[in-house]
Length: 90
Image 1 (cartoon, one colour):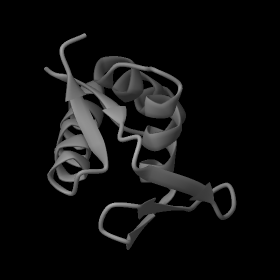
Image 2 (tube, helix red, strand yellow):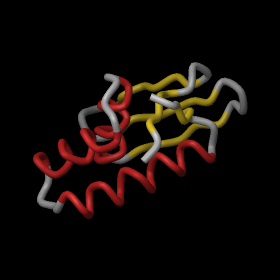
Image 3 (cartoon, one colour):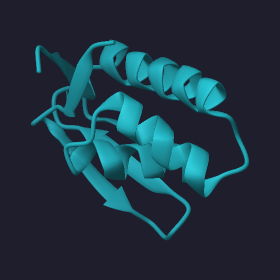
Image 4 (cartoon, helix red, strand yellow):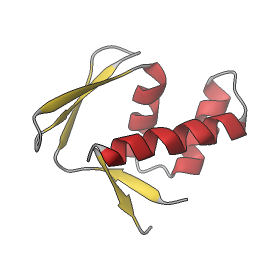
C-alpha cells in the first residue's frame, strides 16, 4: 500500500471534534469531512501510515481491521484524486 502525506497546497480547519474542512489553494475548492474522515486526516497529518491509521480507527470505533483498512485506502485514494494528498515512496 502506498504512503500519503497532505498536499502543501491544502489548508485544513477543524470545525469541532466531529468535522473538518479542507481548502485546496490550487483549485479554491472546499471539502468537508465527517468524524471518521477528520480522524484520518489528523493521523495522516501526524505522519501516520495508512496501516497505523486503520489500526487507530479499529480501536476507536466498532469495526474490524479489514473494514478500517478498506475505508482508509478508499478515502486516501479519493483525496489523492482531488489533489488533497500526495503519494509518497516512504
